[in-house]
Length: 366
Ligand SMILES: *[C@@H]1O[C@H](CO)[C@@H](O)[C@H](O)[C@H]1NC(C)=O
Ligand SMILES: *[C@@H]1O[C@H](CO)[C@@H](O)[C@H](O)[C@H]1NC(C)=O
Ligand SMILES: *[C@@H]1O[C@H](CO)[C@@H](O)[C@H](O)[C@H]1NC(C)=O
Ligand SMILES: *[C@@H]1O[C@H](CO)[C@@H](O)[C@H](O)[C@H]1NC(C)=O
Image (cartoon, rainbow, N blue to C red; front, top):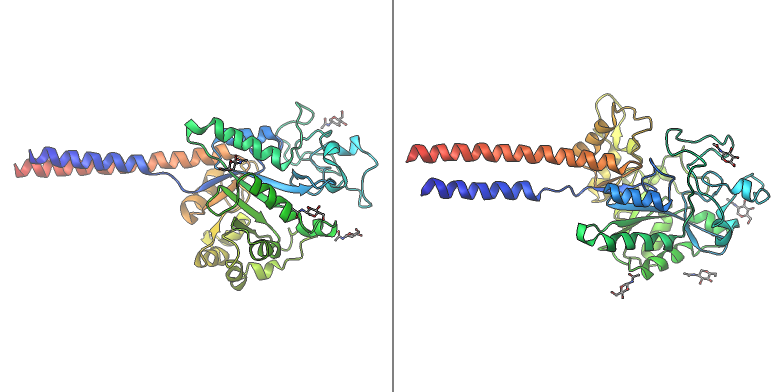
């Protein structure tokens, strides 16, 4: 009797361990599954959803009639046919600005894979081809309804995908007499029941001062994410001092109004032969900020990582970041599932040996 009971207890224990492990790291579909379909189109969002992303990203910019639309830049001319459709509507710098077009006009445009507005050449030549199929820009609300619809239809699949909203260039909007841009976005979030930290929403911005205003003046309880840049990649409109915000004192200051940071992945390791966590990484951990690095693209230059999986291993298994932005959600999800299967098998084998050892002891003691 003795050994049988003992084995049963251990078997149950073994089953429990292998059934409960699940990664808490979140996979964020960067502009959707933008590695496969034109960024920020509904098909790109649907694909990321189907590939298993936990959150879908929305970058938000205002139209001339103050409708938030989902687009990465304040310019329309690198992801649409605006220059051929409205040839005269550029500013003195030659660029076409979303804020100079009404929603009705924006709806007449065809969206496409990203290209260089000067050369017309695609940024990622191996991605979705130009001039095939038809894609459109959508409003922020249209996208929220789309995701809510997918969540409703997938309730039996236990899928509730969240949203990851970026307020783009608040200083540019302010200069265009839209100083209440953030209020407009937060109002729409509220209308769609995204109001508090527990809700499946993150609000990110490269303008740390604006995030501070959102927390302190607007009293928002949303999870706020401070996006970090270096001086070479900062936008011309953003006057934030990133050398301050990435210093320890800046991180400590930021931790009073944000919940996490979104740094470029290369700012999380020390430059050198062995990959060690950077001071920024350690400072963020010290001040209890979650870390969501951008942007993981399997078709980009991966230096210093040999392969995409080696890169994922460093961030997911070594640094244990809390989430990451990716153009290829399927590849990240596959990596996580593969690792899990491996570690579950590890646990099973260990438990199995334990069962054998204990049974032998039991048999011997009989
Ligand atoms: C796509 O079609 C437009 C209009 O027909 C044309 O001007 C453009 O060169 C085409 N682009 C590519 C990459 O084929
Ligand atoms: C702000 O707007 C004015 C005119 O409305 C424009 O001349 C100026 O270049 C803008 N500044 C920036 C930084 O865009
Ligand atoms: C933003 O400002 C505009 C113009 O002043 C106003 O019509 C609108 O109601 C404001 N929206 C919010 C959400 O504060
Ligand atoms: C928000 O929540 C309220 C109360 O639960 C519900 O009646 C309403 O339909 C929800 N709105 C949306 C857009 O989901």
